[in-house]
Image 1 (cartoon, rainbow, N blue to C red):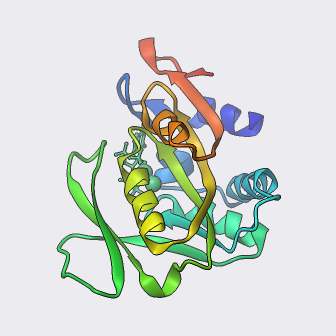
Image 2 (image 1 turned 45 degrees about the vertical axis):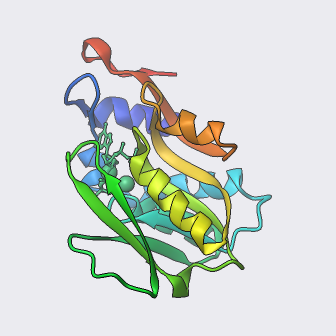
Amino acid sequence: MELLKERILREASILNQDVLKLDALLNHQVDPLLTQEMGKEFARLYAESPITKVITVESSGIPVAFSTALALGVPLVFARRKKTLIADPDAYCERVPSFTKGIVTDIMVSRQFLTADDTVLFIDDIIANGDAARGLIKIIERSGAKLAGLGIVVEKSFQSGARTIREQGVRVESLVKIASLDGGKIRFE
Ligand code: G4P
Ligand code: NA
Ligand code: NA
């Protein structure tokens, strides 16, 4: 998505060789029209899949997942993050480590909102090592829902998350792929 590359070059900043600060576009502020275009692009990419729900993890995945759900005309479900997890028989839970925050969190989806009748499109803002993504994929598998694939806004392809998930046979579509942040420069693939 060329428009998104331009916006990233103008509005993102490099924190270090592994982390791109995307607060202006994804993690603190969102541009509704740009976010709507992202959603339309994911809807176009997955137009042939019989998607019944879009799913993401709170918080930064929600705006783009919402725009995708709107474009597809299906509900959006977002996995909740919990600090302390009280065992809940009515929910699927997975523990996931976080790359940027250096902490472990639990993500949770109520059984009510994800069932074996669903075919889901998993949307997320950024993929790095893919730990959070793998956690949600496990929840989707346990629910019996079918996973149509992933739609990622920014794939950092120098980290292993998206590659590992593709190797499992899951479709992963990314709007932009960043090959490197070395030398303080953003290099797209
Ligand atoms: P992931 O690849 O499945 O997201 O898992 P990983 O453990 O690698 O990353 C965990 C968190 O770190 C995610 O946010 C992810 O978006 C964020 N992250 C990873 N690399 C970058 C980066 O280069 N820049 C920025 N801005 N964020 C990055 P999260 O914990 O899901 O939090 P939230 O943003 O949804 O609240
Ligand atoms: Na994030
Ligand atoms: Na996210």
